[in-house]
Amino acid sequence: MVLALAIVVNVSTVAQLQSAVTSISSDTTIVIAPGTYNLSAPLYINGSFTNVGIRGATGNRGDVVLVGKGMSSPNDGGVPFGIWVGGDVRGVTIADLTIRDVYSHPIVLNAGTHAPVIRNVRLVDAGQQFIKANPDGAGGGVDSGIVENSLIEYTTTSRDDYTNGVDVHTGKNWIVRRNLFRNIRAPQGLLAGPAILMWNGTANSLVEGNTFVDCQREISLGLIERAPSDHTGGIVRNNFIYRRPGLAGDAAILVADSPNTQVLHNSILISGTYGNAIEFRFPTTSAVRIANNATDARIVARDGATGSVTGNYTTASADLFVDPPAGDLHLKETATVLRDQIATPIPEAGQDWDGQFRPAGAATDIGADEYTPRRGPQAPGNLRIP
Image (cartoon, rainbow, N blue to C red):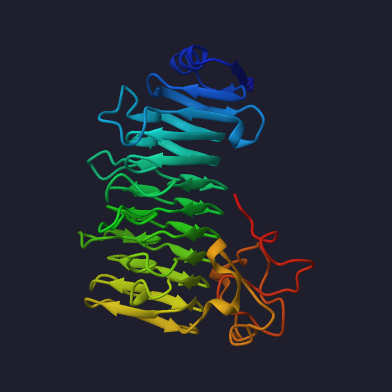
């Protein structure tokens, strides 16, 4: 068997970048030199390709910046999207770059895209969803996507309430891990969509090890009632969630019309912005397990949902954690109400926020962090910022 050789196309101007994307072929990676690239049109990867990619040259996502015409401009200025992927693209990687100030979506993945990987990107100030995975209208969508080690944020707030960080329709087996979501919130009086929204027939989503700071709704597996279900299965585990006082919001984690879903070992401080930290809703939301989460608000079943709720601590306070406003919900040594409280670990909970195995002490800790003594100042140096 003869293996295809990988092709690398180096670009350093907008014209070269557009040309390289237009003529891309299988087993090709476009490598972008450091600089700011003011886009005049979206970068369309559209056709039948295998194993293609766009990445910054240095590995530092701040070195390559793709810029649209502004999320709040009167119109899209010919740049409604940053990177658009569709057709029959089997394996696409977008990495090591920043996309900002785009009127609609910085990254849009259309049905026909298979196994996309979005890694080490910064997405800033999107007019709508930052990463949008669209359905095909016939029950199919984009499957096996990965979003990891990235920063997704608004400088202040969104343009209006129609926004999400990662929005997946009808996709199976997505992984969203080790990202920072910041300021996914709408202007005063409005409520933004969830920072992570997996719905419209999605299944088996894994959301783990992320940090959320000052978002209005953080994670939603399912959203509305839908036959046969809006989402199925999946695990939400080991996430840090902080919301400052006075920021209007909703449940931090919502399981809605999503049977057989697990919510395990998350640390949540929503600071009185909503009455419930975790909600599970609707009659088809059954066989749910919500276990070993540390929250400062209630965990509530609504509208006929059923499941087991065990091992949670729902009266957590900010003084149990290292630096909540920075999103650092590592446990302090003095957080004895959360440390060594769970005698039998849950295998599905996996490793903690830091990738540390449980238990580290006499028993497993409640929440996303398994406490271990840390050398030197605990904040902010020990907070992993993507």
